Length: 134
Image (cartoon, rainbow, N blue to C red):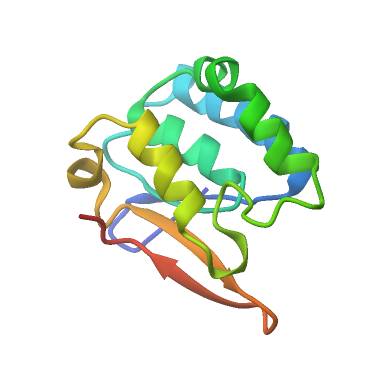
C-alpha cells in the first residue's frame, strides 16, 4: 500500500492470473488486522477485483470465492474465454454482470471515487481507469 499526501492509503490488486489466490489472502489479512475499508482507495485489474470488492465491502474474501468459485476458475484458466470475468481487453460487460449479482444496490454510491478498475485496451495495452459508477 502507498499513501497520498493527504494520508489516505491506496492499495493496488494486480490481476496476476494464478496469483489471485495470494491476493485474496492479502485481502483477508488486511480485513482482519486493519480498518481501511471505509477510508482507502483501491485500484484493481482483472482478478484483483475479487480482493478489491471484498476489501471495500469489508467482507471475508473466502465467502465470495466459495459462492462463485466455478465462474472465477473458468475465467482464470480457460484461454478460450472470450470475455474474461474481470474486464480485460476493454470489456466491462462481464464484471458489470458479476457486480450486479454480487453487490448490494448501494455499493456504487459507497465506492464511487475510491474504487478504480483498470481496463486494458487491446491490442495496444493502454490502460484506463473507471472510478465513477452509477
